[in-house]
Length: 214
Image (cartoon, rainbow, N blue to C red; front, side):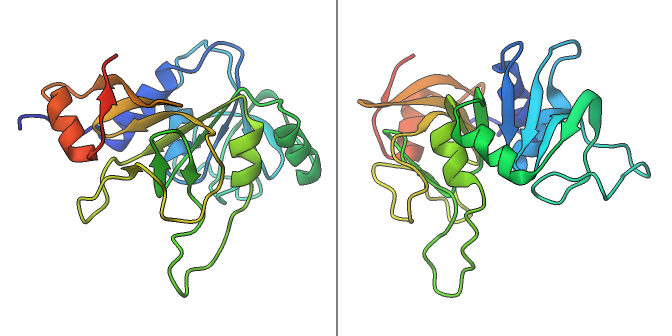
């Protein structure tokens, strides 16, 4: 196998490439926040955070952080000209009302047909913290997942059926991973692209599921 995994920034860049002009986008806690740093210059995209921000920019330069201006993950952010902040109840109304074009979320598991498990592993002692994940997953017009394809134990996070508690059912449209980009359909997974050097057969072996050709 002669292929290299996408770095986190390369993966963020791959996601950013598919975001269309004028989109209202929520970037979930963790790796998805990196997407803000890779949106093409001049592309008008309105970034939303569930704690009540619209119009976020890239991460602030070191030493310029304002810890009164943070996203839902408590990371300092910047605000573009015309950006605004407001009550989180209004922010959730925006999410639940179908006003977001895309949300990009992390995940523990995604099923081949788009079920999402990203808030709890079901392990005893784990702290449930669903936040706005359920509202985003079913409220956005498109839900995309950004994650490593494999766990640290080498098991695929793309599965036939999620074994962790569900966040949403058949809500995920695309999965962006460090090895491949895939689409979730009612008939299963469809390949969009892979990293150079990774064959279709090798990807199917890693995932353990059939994957339709592009």
